[in-house]
Length: 314
Ligand SMILES: [Fe+2]
Image 1 (spheres, rainbow, N blue to C red):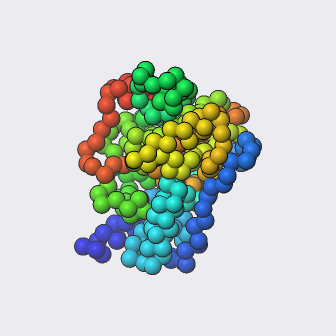
Image 2: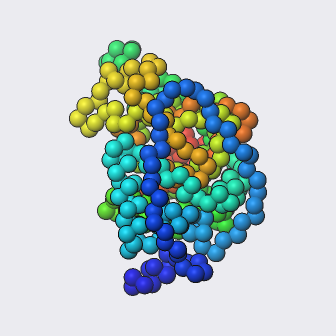
Image 3: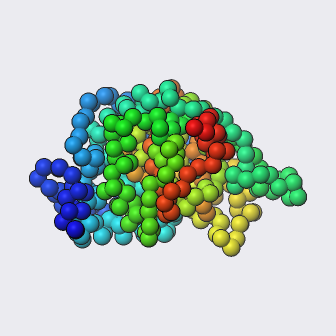
């Protein structure tokens, strides 16, 4: 059974998986000091064809299919350590360079299918509380603006969809996030999304209502689009409203910035870490694959959420 599973995970990759000593996974975030963006070269189509989604991944650096190996255990331990310390884990160059170009190209091609929405709300993604003062964090409001290509609009042959639907990746994420059970999100629109952020788009400061999110950056904008967060600014027992208020009012105290580039896999626990994405600058789209999972099977979105994200319910 184990041999069958291993064979399935490896797919038809010729020559098996080469295991090298794991490169140390450095912390990929820095203190916020300036608003300067990072420029990268434009992506070009590569016409990549694969026989197994594992071919998209740098398996030498991230041996996610060699689950019995010491390197795999080190990788999982490193992910868990980063998550425990700051609620975020970045695996740079998780996707091979040539594959990133192909993934970015197909995401660009899908971008016109994105439903774009601008929403105003608070950092808690809840109704405002009129019983609290107007300057209370729960009554602070700002906007979030972005587009999303829904799962049902992503072609079955798309590389990113093949990667998302591959159990090898899911099993690694289950281990890295240290979950007992792990399933792909069952929503026909929400399972896999391509977030499309154009000039001026942004995510306001907020806390997530889910325990974790998994993303792969496919293409950077020319400027802006910085992922900023304040690790564990609140806990289940303490909302830390005064600290949250300072951030909402513009303080950069304790704010970290994720150091990510196209091809980075990011695991982020945003329920207790306030976070945002700064406004996109330049004409090039910022494209991010959002890979949806849940610790329970069969979970789907409400019609309310579907309407907000995709402008439709079916
Ligand atoms: Fe979030």
